[in-house]
Amino acid sequence: MQKALFIGFLMLFVFSCKPDSQKAERAPEKEMTAKGDTLKISEKEKDTIPFLWEGANVYFLLTDRFNNGRTDNDVNLDRTNPTGPLRGFMGGDIAGITQKIQSGYFTDLGINAIWFTPVVEQVHGDTDEGTGNTYAYHGYWAKDWTALDPNFGTYKELSAMVEAAHNRGIRVLMDVVVNHTGPVTQSDPAWPDDWIRLQPTCTFENYETTTACTLVDNLPDIYTESDIPVELPDALLAKWKAEGRLSVELDELQNFFQRTGYPRAPRFYIIKWLTDYVNDLGIDGFRVDTVKHADEKTWAELYKEASYAFETWKKINPTKVLDTTSFYMVGEVYNYRISEGREFDFGDRKVDYFDHGFHSLINFDLKDDAKNDYEQIFNKYSKLLNTEFAGKGVLNYLTSHDDGAPFDKEREQSFRSANVLLLTPGTSQVYYGDETARDLTIEGTVGDATLRSFMNWEELDTLEQTQNVLAHWQKLGQFRKRHPAVGAGKHKRLSKTPYVFSRTYSSDTYRDKIVVGLNLPQGKKSLRVKGFFGDGTVLYDTYSETQVVVKNGKVELDTPFDTVLLEIAS
Image (cartoon, rainbow, N blue to C red; front, side, top):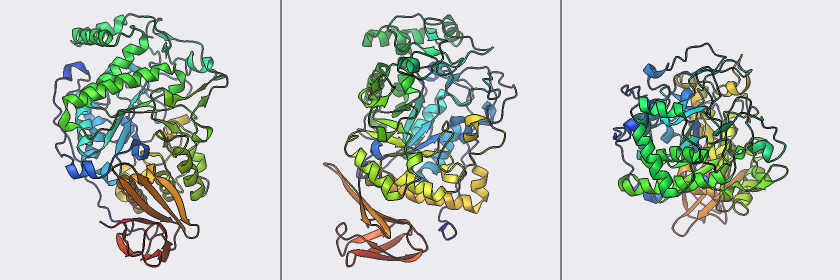
């Protein structure tokens, strides 16, 4: 198939954007209107195909490693010390994401949600925890939740990025961290003792040794279980004052605590700061980091306040609202597997995170399930998601930023990876470079750094095989996006040999049905659709762009591909 795959996609032009202010603070730019992109989604696009998080196609990227939109913000805050391989900032930024949204890259890939790593202000210094000198390029070492890190961009640029995505019907998932701050470095002292614990380090033997501890050495853990009021750190107050936003921040906190009645405990400050981005920008959802390392009541509170903020934004911005979809939260409960049921077992206690604000959890099963045949995979997920997990969901992935044992690490099965990830029931997570076979085995790296190389745009421009891989991912991704039945529907095998299956989705207002054939002969092929599509039904194979008619319970095609994606012809 790979040799015969037709390249039907023009290479994308990267749009340039003018450099903006280096200013990273949130509050001073709150009142600014993002100029951004002005292309609007048509009413037809909004209304004809319902958006369902349960079947969404999510693109996950490391902000610093995806696309460099502005080179003038590549070095900030004296971050100039040498680092280990792939452990320093490389220039990717928010402006770079916006450029790719505007160029149509995500639209062509069938993406309808973007999850990007945290962009709040990170610790300024570097640290070496045995993996090579490292800066906070990944975004998970927060220093100030109320400001953006200048290496990632400005608040105005974040606003423009969200608007550009929304104008193309793409949702935005913000990656958030509540349970820990950044590590202590020479440039970054620890938060006050009543905010964080510095010991013991987690041993993961039970609930307490997983939640009431530091995830790793020198990663200060927030007292998320505490309801004891604390004062704001002097260093943060001084920073706000120097930036000219002290009174604004204090007034907002006063209003928040007065409205909610929450005690001024550490987690509630952070919840307020994170939900500000929802209230101000219309962020559609959170991907929540390190979920099992905090008291689960934290997540229910976070969801409550994020939902309040989202609905407030909708009321203030009625012309920008995509639809009636509620705020969405997906959690990273490390090593959670759908096959083990809704609850996560700590050994001495089980927790159902779906009952604490989460619509979905990241599923660590699929990377292992991918070794099975297609029918085993699809049937398993369809049954679980339509019974025990009905109304909820999982976010499936094959590769990620911190899983050292991904499926097909050598990138030898990129076509099969696309078939498994994009056709398995549930929400799909395309990790940046899955669609271009980005190298995951970088020589000289230590640990998860090898998973985080810069996006291989140059290979996409020059290598035919990389272009072939992308074309396959685009075709499947666009089909998935157009048909909620693929991810959120019910699966049924129609034929074992050749392998043909159907998916159906129905609600009170919408019905969708499709047929897919995989591992088919190249050239002439016959697919059995009897009992699903009646004789005389006109169908369209979106993979080969061929129209066919059902005769005697089957369709006949003659294409150079081993994949068929059938929908009712419009």
